[in-house]
Length: 114
Length: 114
Image: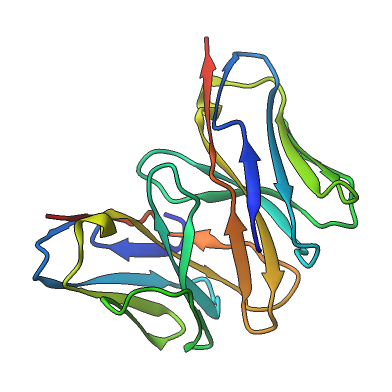
């Protein structure tokens, strides 16, 4: 079963705080783990991504931590800002040779308060 | 704009109507996808096209009919839909192989079936 489980469903964080979103997967054939950010009225946009041979990737205030043995990965948003308020989706990809196929988590609605 | 353009942005149709959704990308991608996004559900992969050939149909009802005339254009033809088909329909594109598996999404078509 190609599933990606995401938690929490919603998250409220104060400005300047750390937002943490967790995901777990089952299929060890997944070879690429992106995070997407979606604002209302827009499609998801690629935020940051990691491959399973790396344990951590940082881009600005956004960090992915990856635990291959536990089949878990998480997104950390440091110094969270009101502009980060959006829905975040983790995903996992398999490249079939003809196309890459993404399986998404259910999403986390993040609200950053002043 | 992300480079993937979807039209129309909003569509209201009756259960007996026939309509089409259009997606266009000029990113040089050679794989295109249709996803369905419903409230409180993961994004559901509907169809995958690679080099204009359908490579996956994820058990989608026949009232949804995709068409990919070339690598830049993707259509979703709709007929005799049900109210539960109301959702945001997202088009995405990617490179079919290679190091970057990230998808680029359009802003979606918000479909309401009445």
